[in-house]
Length: 169
Image (cartoon, rainbow, N blue to C red):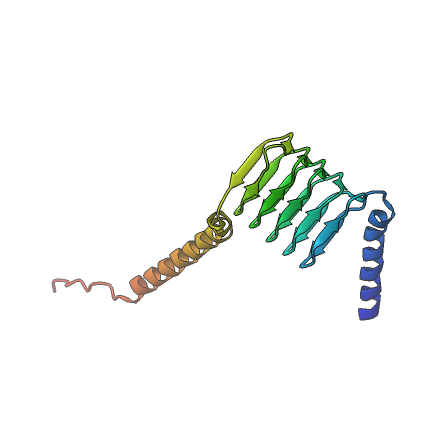
């Protein structure tokens, strides 16, 4: 039973990656391993978690970086949107981004001759990243504390004896 589940998982992974491997501009996904698109190379969408992306060539799709940095070398280009969360974006001279740029919890170092065709939204400082991560958790902690307080309140009220009424005889 375990072997057939493992085979099914392996077959699914092969089928899912087969399309990307056969494409002219493959999508690249990495965890804790830097991605390099060298000069003369091209790539589709790029996703990177806990690593950095260095673009010296052409990216035909979007670039998403979490906990890393994106460096676009001079004359390199990204055709789609760029999102960098808890990291920095550094552009090179005469580089271009075809879509929107969003940098949250980091900096956008943009030379004067870098071209961005879409909107640019930058929320500098790591505080924004921590706020995004911990604000929902604080809400959850508050909700749990409220429920615990209400349960204790109900328990206290049920333990207190009701006042005895004196009946006239």
